[in-house]
Image (cartoon, rainbow, N blue to C red; front, side):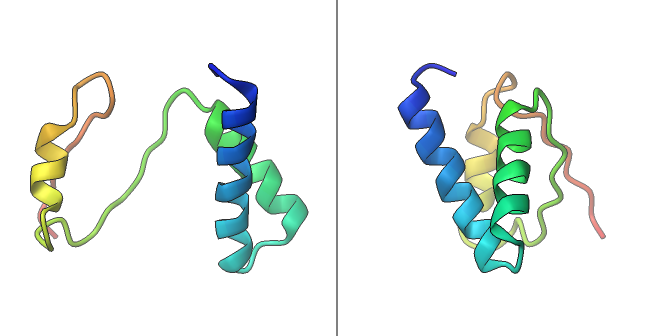
Length: 72
């Protein structure tokens, strides 16, 4: 965490998005901090052929993300 103000701002933004999805404010803040502190996340993305998502995935550095595409 480079700058605590930047980190707090991002956590608050993430928590606000979770609140909009139906989480309680307290639980949203807890989940946002867990996500920020996590060393590794597993995320499932659907619709990678839409728009320019494949180009974005191809541009990611191996240190930033490990991408495995699987047809469903």
